[in-house]
Image (cartoon, helix red, strand yellow):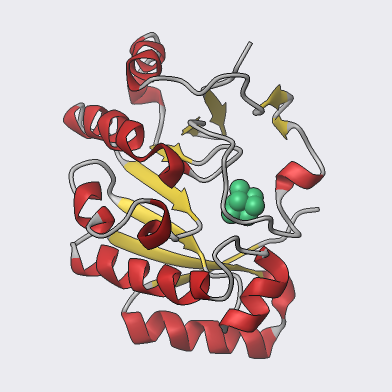
Length: 198
Ligand code: SF4
């Protein structure tokens, strides 16, 4: 049976799609079928109504945050993401989108503005301080242009009033982390340094 929502810690994660424009060398999908013993590979993507029906069966007050994440890029399920996010926001919940940030290519212009009212926070995997290094680790289907598109999307989300976090893993080295900090500062957003777990 497909896993569309799953608990991890005090958060509830929403898994809408397995499609992704990246093929990151560190992606969990390369080494695992899912999280916490649940397979996140989908035989069929859910409708927004199906996800909302599953959420309705849960005690939503139990969770500190609801996160669109899963085994794929949630922007590929954009309309459903917006519908489910708006439902959760309507219930007074905190909602985060974890994304590769390639909204410009995947959704088109205006994606950031459409996220307003559906999510509070957009967490974008920055991964590297320039397009070349990014392409080496993320193997983006849009080529090196994916990197600049990601930074523009981060800025658009920030300008739309969303909380934006850029993230890197701690294995990239202190110099590279400093360069990534400067990029985040330049956009006026936070850099989160994630612990890399194999
Ligand atoms: S962007 Fe996320 S889902 Fe896509 S390949 Fe990279 S780590 Fe995996």
